[in-house]
Image (cartoon, rainbow, N blue to C red; front, side, top):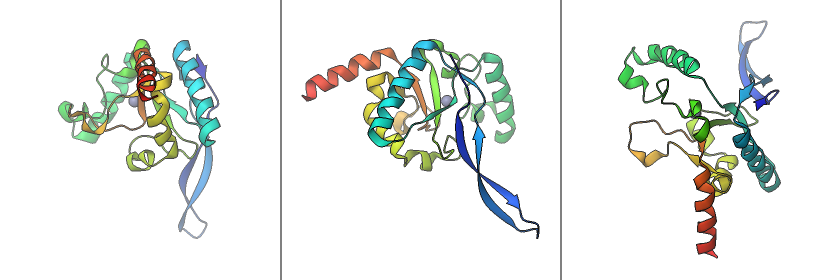
Length: 180
Ligand SMILES: [Zn+2]
C-alpha cells in the first residue's frame, strides 16, 4: 500500500530583503511511503479512532525501507558520529536489522500535522496529545513502542517509532478483561 500526498507544516528560516531572517510556516508534502496492506489497515483504523477521540491524527514519516536505503541512511549518519560504527548503531540500524525493513513487524515513524517528528524533536513529540493517546490505545490496534526509555539496550529513546505486532492486540484484550 503506497501512501501519497500526506501534508504537514514545517518551520523554515528565510531571509528578509534587508538581510535579517524570519521564521515562516510552510506546507510540505511527505514523499510516498509504503506499508504492508494489513499494517496500513490497522494504522488507518487507529487514526480514525484518534481523530474521533482528540481531533488529531499522525502521519507516516517513514514506513517500509529496503536494505539498500537503510545502508544509504547508515552511511549518511556515520559522518555525524565521527565515522564510528559503534556510535552510529545507537541511532540508525544496520541494513537487515531495521524494523523498517521487516514487513511482519513493520515499523512506522510518526509525524504530526505541525511537522513534529523524530530527532531533534524528542521532547516535543513526547509532549504531544497524539503521543499520550498512542500510549493509551496503540496496543488495541497492534502497535507497540520499540525503543522505550528504560530498555537499557544502548539504542536511543524514540517516542515516534512504533512497530506492528499482531500479538499486542491479544494482550490488550486480556488487559481490558482483567481491568473490567
Ligand atoms: Zn523508525
